[in-house]
Length: 354
Image (cartoon, rainbow, N blue to C red; front, side, top):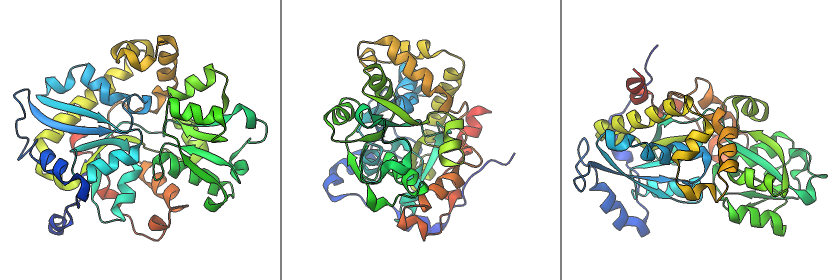
């Protein structure tokens, strides 16, 4: 099987990502943490900063789990994990140069390409969104499908986030225009739950462990479950690669040794996850992630486990599904020609799995 590696062009050097003015200092600091094929940090190993769109979200579990299992250390990496409440904020940190990698949804790579920013998934954690559309208990009887989104306030982690993208697609697919409902940025966890309780949102898209907490407190019901490949197929018409480690293409090309080490560590974690129970995985995570209910947390992990790949390889039909979904509502992508080959690479994970 041919190892996928997007073709590079000399002109790519001129397409370096523009740092956000307010983060220039951070960008300068980040650029010095891994020079050449991976410069040394503070003596602990090659220093790499990774921003995660919510470290405690189960969909991004491989990020913290890899650190807890000691696999970064085993590769000679000193990885600093940072966290933002939404994937779109992790994206911002990456394109500004504040961090070298982001753990977030693959769909951001397509959106960024239309803006002249070359970013690629180097390890694909998942083959399904891992997202759930939850309806508040008050509206459980009158919101029974995305057709009922018209006139509603729908919770998303952040405007421009993947939950925002997916909510818009589900609405448009059901015949509801994007202008006919209101997306509301409410984050995840306590802020999402509070918005649901107070009526700030009628329904919303979120992930575990937030979903498990909502159901345990009888605050709402599941409308659409996309935590499994089957759920993704039913809601989106195909596999939807979501959580991934994505990086600036220029940085990847200049730091292949470091990227390979990251891929080795993450693929090792994905393999470990595929041979251990949800309870065993929960035991490895920070104690505060369970919020005092280890059984509920393990159950949330179990519900989400089917979304993860075992080898970090991009599902063959995944990129095309993501492109189709985004083109349904995103005017920037609808009229753009997307080079899907440049949105991901399997070069590093294929070596890691070999």
